[in-house]
Image (tube, rainbow, N blue to C red; front, side, top):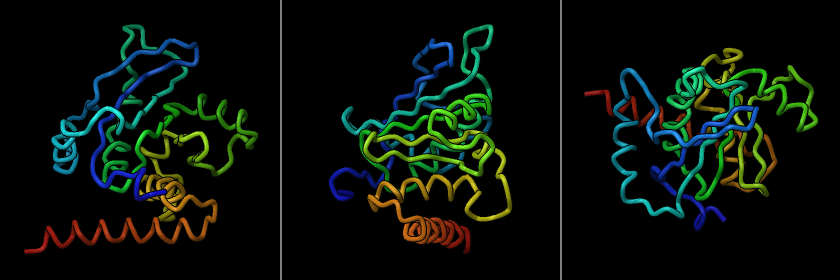
Length: 193
């Protein structure tokens, strides 16, 4: 599966912002950040050569819209963390990421999924539906010091569920940890003269 449905580099991204009330709008493909990272800038420059079918879709969902109709700043901050991590690892072609921009949205998703509200679940991947749901606040504020609660590991973990086509948490977590550690080592090596 992962050889034909995965991209190893940045994919073109379609971004949509929706409210629970049902209003949706397309938003610019680049998150608003004060200082884009070098990695994000490099990933963005690769987007132009990717065809439309390789599109990854990220749908930001918030409880309410701002009075001016713009995407809430919380959604933009989450996107600025999430997007580079998705692009940093092998990721599925044609996948949809749903991002709960606030805890009210996450609570509704948890109820809909049959999970206990307030549980430690930080993301949910449904391989048959080609989608992953992310608890947005987990991208900005890790829920513990545990490495598995860190934003990069959360994204890598969900991508490994897809990549391995597996629900085996230990197998998935082993590969996710390997991916994150290898990426960190590459970054450290690049910084060492």
